[in-house]
Length: 67
Image 1 (cartoon, rainbow, N blue to C red):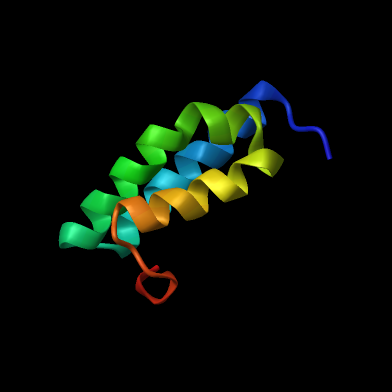
Image 2: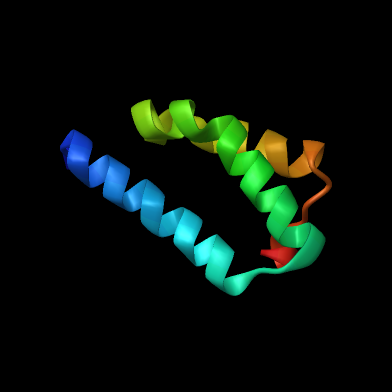
């Protein structure tokens, strides 16, 4: 599936809104920091970014069950 630039931006904004609406405190801060750090890579190369996301989970001290 090929997404337009507008669709990528909309998807990104939706992800950030989901985080802002559903998380609080330190968990929210860590998620926003992680996704802000990965924004360019995830928007441009979404399929190859999974490994980077997993590394950031470890870096920011997040666990899957926290998400």
